[in-house]
Amino acid sequence: MKAAVVYEPGNADALKYVDVPTPKVKPGWSLVKIKGFGITHSEIFTRQGKSPSVKFPRILGIECVGVIAETTDQNRLPVGQKVVSMNGEMGRDFDGSYAEYALLPNEQIEPIESSLSWAELAAVPETYNTAYRGMLQLKLNNARTLLVRGGTSGVGIAALKLAKALNPKLLVYGTSRHENSEQEILDLGYDGFIHDQENHLDTTQDFDRIFDLVGAATTIDSLNHLEVEGIVSVTGDMGGIWALNDFDPVTAIPNDRYMTSFASYKLYSKYLNQLFKLIEEKHIDVRPVKTFPLSQIADAHRYLESQKKPGKVVVLPEE
Ligand SMILES: NC(=O)c1ccc[n+]([C@@H]2O[C@H](COP(=O)([O-])OP(=O)(O)OC[C@H]3O[C@@H](n4cnc5c(N)ncnc54)[C@H](OP(=O)(O)O)[C@@H]3O)[C@@H](O)[C@H]2O)c1
Image (cartoon, rainbow, N blue to C red; front, top):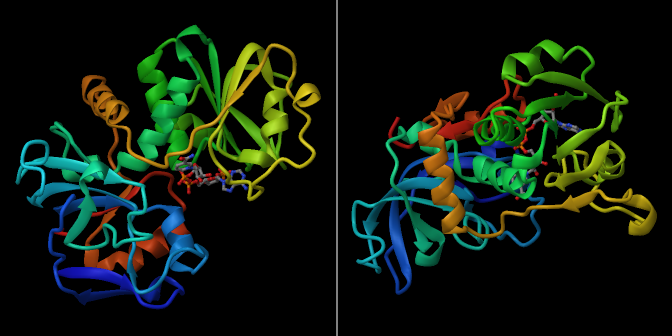
């Protein structure tokens, strides 16, 4: 089969499009024919050698959509079944989705029913799942306003679309670090723009809910922009700061405000199927901003690294 293998960490050219043996099924694992996958920043970090636990050579790719090609679970995963897989140690401890086929643990393969195109399906897994779980945590039914901190990010845009589908009356605001991004934010479908100025919201407005994708760099500021009974979900780390030093919850969390977080370590089938149903029922536009064939995976990484246009970048092996 064709695959993109990283033999040595490096820049995008470290992704070598080569022939490798198609993996053979083993007990508890099934072979998935890859129909598409989104690429993620975590894969760029891994390619650069910044994931210490990942040993090379490795086929990267932490998510995919496809069909079962060979199975060890005839009941749940029959040959031809449409499936999604993501997370676990895929593309890290064992070879991932940057290939025509991937051998994956059965418990990490989820059968799905969907009439979306492969390009649309491939744009969903990690990005929309993270946003969806965040929106569920934020209990949007009782909310009037939501701020997406990191409004132009892929997860942020997914959150906007899901939030509007879950509560059409919700007013959703989006942030950007760039003062002149108001039009871009409004064009994405947000109801308002807030400038995130060096990790401080340039507003006196408070919000019922905040989905904070910038992370530890802005957590305290987000807490201080919550209405009473407000909730912040800190679910990203774009600010490049990973921990809150000297965090005193008693003084840092204002009275009657709540903080939560989501990390997508494993695949939860219940939520994934709910998510696909919601996308279809509400006709949520999940089309990727750009697609590449597998042979141009290095260009796909370069595009993501220099991305000017917000949205999901997807690779379609058969394109
Ligand atoms: N918890 C989980 O399980 C999980 C899963 C997936 C992703 N995530 C997290 O979700 C976040 C978004 O991921 P993504 O792939 O959607 O990102 P993305 O699409 O690459 O986001 C790019 C945008 O992020 C904004 N940004 C970049 N650096 C920033 C900074 N220092 N402060 C504020 N904004 C910054 C920029 O917007 P402006 O230039 O307009 O400011 C940029 O347009 C990441 O932190 C990622 O780690 C978490």
